[in-house]
Image 1 (cartoon, rainbow, N blue to C red):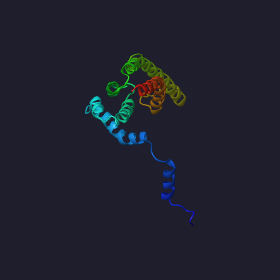
Image 2: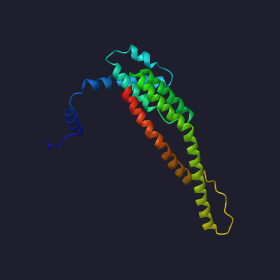
Image 3: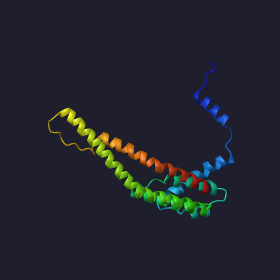
Image 4: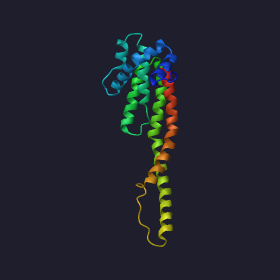
Length: 196
């Protein structure tokens, strides 16, 4: 019977195996939430990142900056609507404020803005063409299925765009198109994380 351990005893054994946290881990735990909160406030227009870093204890700055960068990078996304575009531009500006190597960050951000502009211009044309192609292909399939079902009788009109299978196919195609841009975006995010 003495071999049976409670869940608490097993959990305490696992905690003991982890060992003591490093100074770096303690710094992240202590200052990370504050940095995340500041970055979220900045995105809402309620915080000044540069001033917050300047007034912070020198020991806290790297942890604050790291947490701020994580939040700002997480808010960089493809500008598929006005809100996403505004949020991404604000995140880019915030990253610029906390950047250590501003010249390197500016170069990466210029490339990032080019990708966003391409997504909004040529990418929009590409998505529109793909949408029309999916719509035509799906419409053709629906008409063929209706002809097989009704024979020579008149085929009822079907709202192709409202059909759930059309929507599913369109989202699959859109995902393929966007994945190309998202792959490049992730590469730039990694570069920014290293430069900030």
